[in-house]
Length: 476
Image: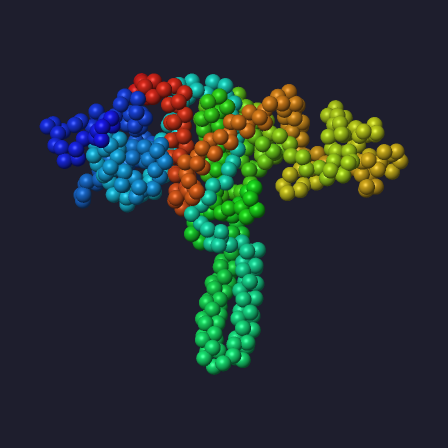
């Protein structure tokens, strides 16, 4: 074949062995992995670096840590796939010095060093801070649902159990009716059908007993859920009708460079109580004296917003529009003006709503305001169908009012949030593939998420400042 580039003969023997360094360029990302791990003090981060006195020598933690960081950078999360790569991947041969740990050793390292791996992720954030990548001190916070290693059919709630028990009861009744019908058939046909139906009924009865045992266990579980494959996974609502069984991953992302400065894996489906916790973690990670956090309406909670303000964090959280009065074309709560000097509300008709009583609902202090002028009001039909219009004011309503004024002055806050925090989630889920997490239990899933976040941040910093510059910064 002429006019084509010809390959070398596979049986050709080289005069001298080639050096692995010849295959790895100076701007190869694997160089960053090697330098970064070598600069870490693994004993301070929680890894055990003391070799056993007896038995077969073990691999140094830095070797296995390099393997995992490289694997997650290149979308190779499985321990078996990592083992195969050590035998055929020239970059890994260079990185590990031709070492090839077996998959069980690789998997056990991730399982036994959860704390150390999470600390390595935090250590890279410290490096980003030293590189002055967090100068704006503004983060966007959001949560996303990730699938666990637990199918829908192996997750049970009281509603699911009752529904499945009813389905099995109906199936048993249907089989009994079919057996009566089979008795009227010829003997050979009747015997075959009856045998098959009896086998199905026996299977259903066994399944029914299993469900009853699960129901007895469920009565003793505070969360109201049982997952058989991953005990920490929970059924969570999503935008799809079915939802998923998994975990709720919270992240705080810097708005300047889109780096994940803080993250946490929870098995709580709601974001309502996560704002202050994530904001405080971001503030510590960025060492920011005055941090601004932006979140969507799923985080709208007076207590959480007040907790942020008490720690020097300025929140921007959009308010959910759930007013039934406004939906029906009547005056909304926002149409009533609160006057803090007199602790009263002024209604659209000009009447004063004074504080009538205070109660505690769901652990929160609620004040109720109303006016005696409602029965004589000329525009009462636009306000309320009840005899009197009552306005509720929470304990931390002043914090919500102040935040709404900040949002009015910053109309692009939600756009900044959307373009900042949603991109990392999409990228991470694309890297993970269809199954998302590969490990089970909250602790191991948190470790796996830390490796994903470390890989994501490392790629981002390589793009921002360059590979060679990052290596110089690590070695400084």
